[in-house]
Image (cartoon, rainbow, N blue to C red; front, side, top):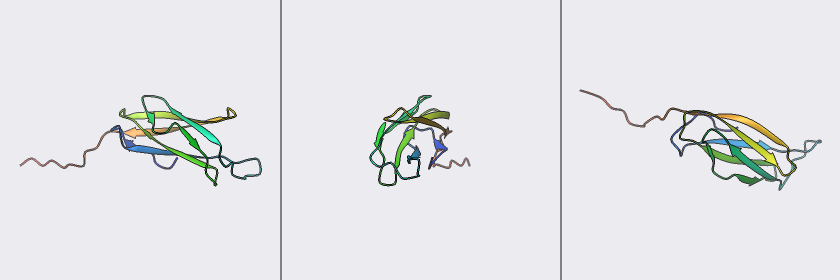
Length: 98
C-alpha cells in the first residue's frame, strides 16, 4: 500500500500497490491483476497489468468512514488482501465565530 487514511469523501483515494515476482524474485511482467474492495469502497480501475518491475497499482475510494479489504488476484487464482482505512471527511475551511 502506498497511501492510506484518505478522507471518506468519495473522491480522495488510497493507493494500493502489488509487486509480483517469481521464485527467484524476478518481476512478473505483463501479468493481469484483478482488484476488488468491500464495505462500499470502489476500485477506480478493477483490472491492471504488472509493469516491467512486476508492479500494478490502483486507487480505492469510499464515501464511508472505516476500513475495507482490498483483494488482488492474478490470472492463476493466487490472491492476497490488505486493509485500507477511510477517515472522517475534513473540510479545508476554517470557520471562526465572532
